[in-house]
Length: 465
Ligand code: GLA
Image (cartoon, rainbow, N blue to C red; front, side, top):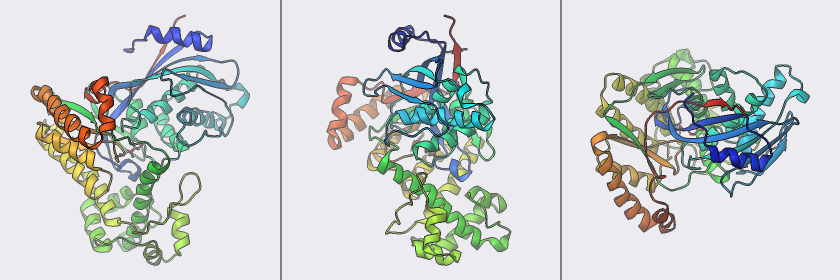
């Protein structure tokens, strides 16, 4: 066990809960190197766990309450009772991530025949060094940490791969229709290597990064929260992919594609990525498809399109976008991004850092132009990073703000960081978002420019009291 428990947290834990902590749980954040928005489409991703993390001290309770404290004051304490259906707090409440993890474990326990009365709750103190809403998976880290706490206090063993899949489903509790990348890397990462992750079923391959290069994460400071409006921006994307998949499956039914497929990966594996792309180009053209056009093509009504493909997790329906659905662009991003992940694995196993950098750059262009998830600040930060010597630079995570990930030769890291601080933060951000820049002058840049190396996945350490 490599995690060291910080003693000041123990004192704080005892003071807040009146209990002795029994376990220390450490859960890393992640940065995605390449493969954006491919996971829920069944295509691969390549993230790594980072040193920024969620730390949690926990003690079992004799009742069924879950009581959580956070070292950050603005996250007020939350308590709730375990039940088969734990009702969420208001949208955006940090306690919902705890509830999501606990609910995932409780549901599984009840389904496997455990009695509700035998399930224990816990008291926990949470401390996070992961910036929130920055695309580094602070939310999934909290969901997984809470689940591990619930498993640990009940003395339940678990299989990491199975738990990763369960947690991907459990996190949908907060209303985001995400895939399984974050939970998988958080639970399955090994120090020293990135992971190529395939889905449905989950499969892991360890990938070595080029030894002379560093991964540098730069926070654009534009917040990318997964709440309310932003959540709708995110959820629209899996919905557009589902619609494109249904239309393509119909078009390719005479080529052996099953019409009941739900993910693009299923069509790609029936034909080949290039063939699917060619067909998609012919079928969709550059125009946006209206909901009615989709309905006509599928031979159903527009209401049926909404009911089958546009349902959000809370049961509401995605509002019909007046400009229609850019189906070709969405499909093209997802398929080419899946190919870029495969090509990256090859480049990295051949030790070709420059080729990997090119693929990262192409990924950013595709995220920006075809998937529509970049923003002016991210584009600027990527441009600055390249001029500062990054061989590859791209947005990372869900997009719409948050961080970029950069591949930088170790000899250039120092000058890279200086140039980015000078030109992006001191130049672009100061000029365009002075309110975001002013906080940085006092806080410094250690939290916004992070030089990373691949870390170990989540760890649980028993404490001998
Ligand atoms: C979020 C989701 C992931 C993935 C990324 C985009 O982080 O939680 O499952 O879809 O966005 O690659």
